[in-house]
Amino acid sequence: MSVFTALTLETLRDGLRRRGLIAALVASALAAFAVQRCGSCDAAVTLQGRSVTLQGGELGALVAVTGLAWIAAWTYAVSTLLASDGLATALEDGSAASVLARPVARDTFVLTRLAGIWLGSFALGAALAALAVGLAVARQHVPLAPGLGALVALGLGTWSVVAAAMLASLSLPRPATLLLVIVAGAAVSGIEVAALLGARTDGFAGLVAQWGPAWIAAPVDALAPWLASPLPGPPPWPLVRALAWAALVTAALVARFRRLEIPL
Amino acid sequence: MQAIEWQGASKRYGERVALEPLALAIPTGTCWGLLGPNGAGKTTALRLALGFARPTSGRVALQGLPPSDARSRVGLGFLPERLALPAHAAVEDWLGLHARLIGLERAEAAGAIRAALERTGVADRAHEPIGGLSKGLRQRVGFAIALLGAPSLLVLDEPTSGLDPLGVRDARGWIEAERARGATIILCSHQLSEVERSCDHAAILDRGRIAAEGPLSTLIGPGESLEDVFVRRVAR
Image 1 (tube, helix red, strand yellow):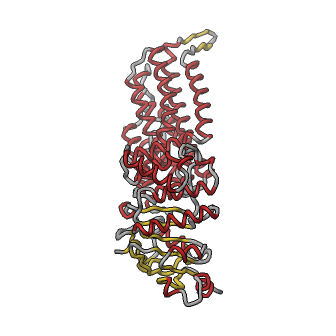
Image 2 (cartoon, chains in turn green, red; image 1 turned 30 degrees about the vertical axis):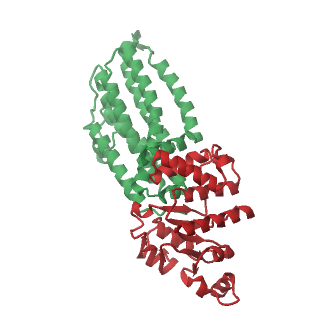
Image 3 (cartoon, chains in turn green, purple; image 1 turned 180 degrees about the vertical axis):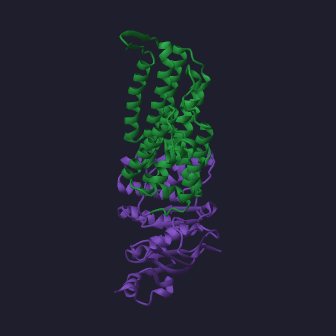
């Protein structure tokens, strides 16, 4: 087993010991139950006095896409929770110093923390997303490939969220890190959803919609083939942007960690 | 060959001077006591040497390399004052991780772990979670980690902290055995009698600068102890 694998697995074990992850597991199980229920829902609406019923086949794909967008948001929230102290705690309790006193490069150490926390949080999100995709494929008879694309997009988004939260945690206390990443994440997601629905985005919002991390846009765009009509505002290059942001935030984290003073 | 060399290395935090330019070389195969009152700069000097902080000015070389180079820490055994061990992990599993970090192969690692645990008296607790051990036993596990794989350079920061008198005696024996094996040892301690027994050289830091350094045989005058020298050098 390589040093990278050993440290990554140790980070994962460290994450599994946290109460936050246990709470996330329980909440994810509840969410999975909701996904299972919601994947089979029908809609009955009254339109100008006439009752109109939409069967699962017509509505289910839209519900599945919306559900996967919520799963992405949930996964990012869990990732933020775990990443906000995944590195900071190792620095505070001295375990980082213990490892870095060995012939382990700082880049290796910080990347293994990132990979371990990503594995833990993405596993939760991927399990939920896989359930939602599986139900959509089984019940709505939509193709599987877009669902797999959405999983890839979710993985990239989770990676950049984890890296961003770890980066913030090197300069801010945990509550401030949580607040910053959750507020920024909600703002980015809100702008992306508005753009997906065809809203006109200018200025900063336009920049986010065009060049942002595509945290919600990339998974939703991957699922577009499931929808009967095209997305009102298809995002530009969502997967490429998600990949670029994951690489960018990772590079920023590594650069910051290289210069960090390790407490003893 | 120098094990550690501070070449005019200083450290400032804003206006506060943690370490004045320090020029000190620790030759390989020697045992040095790094002494000083609280806040004298000992930990800062160690942090610079291990690459945990960058000097504000000057340079540091660890085994001939910049401490930022991971290869400089090959053969380094470190026992920090604030010993961090994961409570959940079994003793042998945590040593297993460290064995991998120092590049021991699986078969080689098993032997080295067993030897380190037996030597430090915790072999019978190998399967237990570290969190269930007493402070003294955890310190022994810390020693086992530091001694794993026969290090060529051993940095021990307050190594007898939490040990009972028998543990202190054992620790002295381990340090003496490492010296006899040819390892370079840096002993950071407030236990001056331990330093006097174990080391052949000492550097006394006070308010961020060296107050005295050299072989104990020249530092300590006739009828004096290291404690007398320490008090004389750092008395306010």
